[in-house]
Image (cartoon, helix red, strand yellow):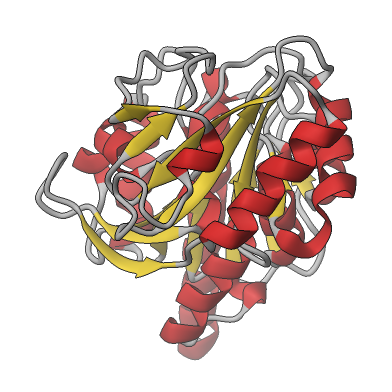
Length: 307
């Protein structure tokens, strides 16, 4: 959900975290991480993802994108076919392709909490405008910018969109989006977190002052932890990749984690390692090395048995 602006850059090769445990699951962000700037998945990355799945390592796409924007990777899901969308607000089965996805798990933002967040943020940052992301619908205020050329299902003040009798009121709210036309993005994030407190989880993935507000405790990390627990996978067996503040919890939680060469400083600080930029196939570079190390370890065990 972002372009690559206002971030740090680096070209060094991946740093290897100490005492690495062989991975069982790879969790990767999309925009600015797995995807190149033109929103494509490079042939090298496609091959690396396929090789990981072939080696028995599950790959989860973990993104701030809504399910309807997952067509960019729907051709590259394997086996389970699941993706974590909306910064952890939904687990989606991508089998069947665009428009036919199925919500496996939904962690909604209660409308009361959403209304509180809108009220508090309007008071703290006058001029903020909002949009509402639901499982299938998208609604926005008239002044909310067309950041992604989205055609909203309805235009109205956020308070009306979040009312109990609003259009789509029977559909869960996944997150609300808050945009400010003049504030610095990081300053806006700090201000919003202080204003909203524990009523919701606030993060960002855009280079602009655009915040993503989810239910309390809902993040990429917490939903990924639930998916891993269902599979009997510990956090030490997870390798995560990301580049923006909405990846911080996931990068901190995973046993091994890599910030991209183009990552925000917060992501760099949270990760245990660093890889090259998204346009240099930074995810693929690490996956290739991890699989080579895994193969070497298995080969070494076989040699010891022969001896």
